[in-house]
Image (cartoon, rainbow, N blue to C red; front, top):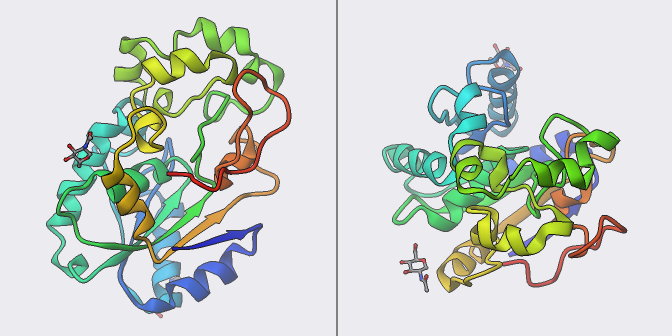
Length: 245
Ligand SMILES: *[C@@H]1O[C@H](CO)[C@@H](O)[C@H](O)[C@H]1NC(C)=O
Ligand SMILES: *[C@@H]1O[C@H](CO)[C@@H](O)[C@H](O)[C@H]1NC(C)=O
């Protein structure tokens, strides 16, 4: 697997990677849906550039379910849809937009007998977790550890009803994160390591991780590159471990 990091120049990057002319699928971000103009335009533009067919994969009704349907269920729906798309059977690429990367990586790791994923192109994916409520921002009220802790993010109820709770990683509450967070620790093989997940993720031909330098949604922005705060503090962000899966 080639591990490529780009600061930006997204357009150039996508242009050169998608030349494969394999079909691609897009997973949109939170509060979005495939039928929104921005996503339709993005998918069509990529298709035009690459000469490949592109599909935005919708999960449930899009906007609402992106907030409230837990990821294992979102991924299962995506997996079932992808298996029915015969045009993907020879392989395809995934373009993940923000939270859509959680679904995309979930498909790569958990979708048994799904069509093979060749490349993952991730735009601003919260791969190593986030320490803020999505769309809240990086203001003091959004990342204040006390307010996050009070929200009982790792309770069974919140985990089952609020999708982003599956990838909120409060650096000062790691024990509860490992115990209570139902999604990201599994996806990132942080607790019970599963070699099948690792093998599937490592089978990608290219992993392209794009971080937005001015990202104010993802806290910290380096999570797009698997960077994160050290356990126990909100201090300096550490770069990705070599062994990420
Ligand atoms: C894609 O190409 C078609 C056909 O040339 C064109 O009509 C359409 O406007 C293009 N879409 C975008 C988003 O550029
Ligand atoms: C790992 O994941 C695979 C695929 O979902 C599953 O069949 C297997 O039982 C898991 N192994 C462990 C040790 O959990």
